[in-house]
Each structure stands twice: as C-alpha cells, then as structure tokens.
Amino acid sequence: MLTNFKVGILGGDARQIQVIKKLCESDATVYLVGFDELEEQIPGSIKTNMENIDAEELDAVLLPVRGTDHEGYLDSHFSDYSPQLTEEWAENLKPSTLVFTGITNNYLTTLCDKHNLNLIPLFNRDDIAIYNSIPTVEGTVMMAIQYTDFTIHDSDVVVLGFGRTGITLARTFKALGARVKVGARKPSDLARIYEMGFEPFETKTVNEHVSDCNILLNTIPAPVVNVKVIQNMPQDGIIIDLASKPGGTDFRYAKKRGVKAILAPSIPNMVAPKTAGDILASVIVQILNEQGERGSY
Ligand code: NAP
Image: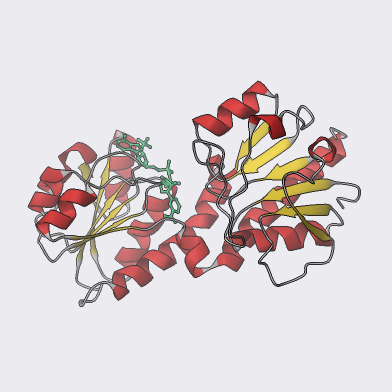
C-alpha cells in the first residue's frame, strides 16, 4: 500500500487515468495538475495547479509519456493550458524524488541531474516497451487498413528497426499474410530476422528494398526514410512512421512525390488508453512499493 505517499501528476493523456486510479486504490494522495477538464472525479485525487502544489512534500512526480518539451512544457489533454516544469519549481522537490516519464530529453535529464532527482524514463525498460508494442502494433494494423484500399494479406511490407516495436510489427504483419522484409544494422539482428522467416537487409541499403513496398513501417528515430528511399517506392505505397517525433521520414519530399506518409505518435493512447495506462500503472506502483519497502522515502 502507498498510504502517506504523495504523488504529483503533471499533465498527460487518457493513459494517466489508469495510473491515477491505481495510485488512489493503493491509498496514495494524488495531486492532479492539468486535469481541470477531466469530468470523472477519482476518489483520493485532488485537482490543483503548479503554484498551489507543495513540491517539497511530493515523493514522486509523474510526467506525460512524452515527457517535457525543450522548455519544460507538458502535454495536457484534459486542460486548455500546458503546465510547465520549471527550474524554480523543480528545485523545491526533495533530492531523490522519483520523476517518472515515458521518454526523456536534454531539458528533463539536465534538470533532474542538477537537482538530484531520480529520473525514471519508463520506456527505457524492456518490459514496458514490449508490453506497449502490443497496442502500438494493433493501432498500426488499424491505420494500414484505414489508409489503404488493399489487404495486408499478400502485400509487401518493409519494417525498419528490429527493436521492441519492430519485432512485434514484423511478426504481426507476417501473421496477417504479408511478405515482410526487415531492415536492421546488427549482424545478430539480421540473423534473427532470417531465423524468424522474414527477409533481412541492412538498414543503410533500404533504398534497394522498397521498389515493391506497399507499406513501409518505420521505427528508427533517425532520418532513414530519405529522398532516395521515397523515390524508389511505388507512388501508391504508404509510409507509417512510428518513431518518436520528428520521425525518420522526409515528409516534405514524400508529399512532393505524392507518397502518403503518416507520422503516428502515441498510438497506444489512440487505440487502447486503458491497456496502455494499465501497463504503466502496474510498473509505477511496483517501483513505488519497492521504494517504500526499502524505506527510501
Ligand atoms: P528500440 O527497441 O530501441 O528499437 C529501435 C530500433 O531502431 C533498433 O533496431 C535500433 O537498432 C534501430 N536504430 C536506432 N537508431 C538507429 C540508427 N541511427 N540507424 C539505424 N538503426 C537505428 O525502440 P522501440 O521501443 O522499438 O521504439 C522505436 C521507436 O518507436 C522509438 O522512437 C519510440 O519512441 C517509438 N515508439 C512509438 C510508438 C507510437 O505510438 N508511435 C510506440 C512505441 C514506440 P540497434 O539495436 O542496432 O541500435
């Protein structure tokens, strides 16, 4: 149980609702910033704002999955305004306060380092990223169906990246009857891609493997789907770019060439916020309970 435990939830989307519920069920006191338009009243939670929250009393802070922007602003789907995680606010937090985020950036990492805060980028954890690949890929299948006039079955699919999301993508699209090629750069990944029955190629040669590609799925957060690649794709092919913003696709050139290219962020929140929130909630509560058992708060 998290009795006497105080958590500040600063912004976020529908996934956060599951986390709030789970924390409240565990008897934590939960302060919500950026949730003024949330209609549901979750017992044990208190709506407030950055100015009125006692930062020094918090044991943990939960940021949106995307973390902050480069000035500390936080996405807030349940409010018209974006809370800001400023230097002045963060310096009031106790050293070692847990700061949960999905992913981090320079601003957030530097801020946490400077004030000795314990930053936990949840998507660095393999377990969370692998569980999260389930709703991500279900949503990608939905988009592939929605934006094309052909079946996935009997189509040619190229997956770029063979990490936590790329593996689930390749397996799922193959199970739906597509011919799947996968681009990776590590020899061990290329071997595993072959072993799993996909056609492997080195990512840097992707432009040589897209001439018959109907659906290109990118998970590499680097500019890999460049002019050369898009030039070699069929014009009626589609690119779904899952990599974190700004994605890995030259969207300007794709538009110019008439190849449909979609940057698809936060798919789990779009298609399965409850499941995606439960994945985060169970790990966050587990970490907080472990901290409590160690007496580190
Ligand atoms: P991951 O497990 O780290 O996999 C990333 C893959 O990209 C690996 O195969 C990696 O190769 C490769 N890669 C990274 N940088 C590269 C580069 N410069 N050149 C060539 N290959 C490179 O990550 P993940 O969990 O699958 O997530 C992938 C991306 O999708 C991230 O940007 C993540 O934020 C995003 N994502 C988006 C959604 C969504 O809803 N849109 C959902 C989940 C994840 P190596 O192993 O050789 O480094």
